[in-house]
Image 1 (cartoon, rainbow, N blue to C red):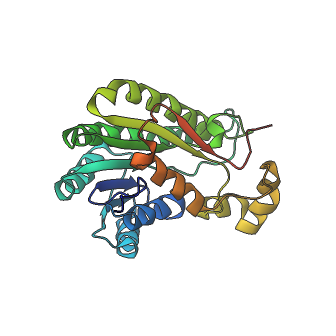
Image 2: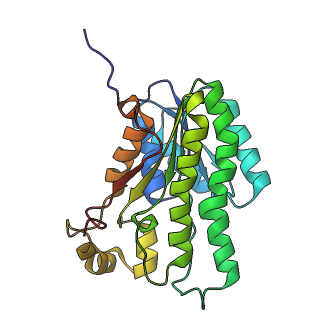
Image 3: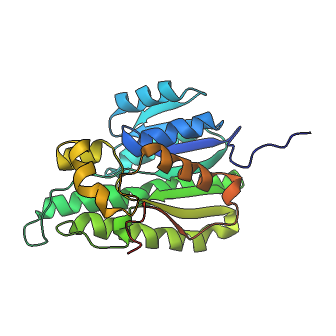
Length: 254
């Protein structure tokens, strides 16, 4: 007699927000491989549909502007209409902000970082939590960062919003444990994705500059973060809520 792996998501509905590239894309594909039906949401609806086609397993893509309440409500309603059993929800949307101190950072850039990195998580959770409670519970995961714990020069908006996600998750964990909902954050270190390519000019340059800041002397891989997200979404993490899973290659250890 064989027993099902606790890391599987067979027959479960999942929503992943921010799938256009990098970590979000890889999480969506990983969840589908684990048996989930995945709603792939992204600002770029074409990119979302492309990732859904790559994921298979009945995955589908939807356009969603997380900084716009009406867009979030429409996209989440459309996703939930096709996912009657929502058991996992991942919020990974984040904007790119310029490198600048608070003196030099434009207020519009600050406002956009807050809207996308933080308020969008609130708007998505506001729609997803009741649906997950109706399904009997599940796992809500907010993608934070190692920079939620330590400061990085000239990154005030990013560090502040990612730090706020840790607190938002803790409060939601306390509020919705009674609904069978576990809420955690997942904090990657530097990961070799398009975001770092944009910031450093190339992944190779990011590896040279940022890799040595990690004890493992390298950048992380999106697949490593997706594996951690699958753990949090699965029954293997059934006793974990209100926590931050730090996958940072030792960045914050010293």
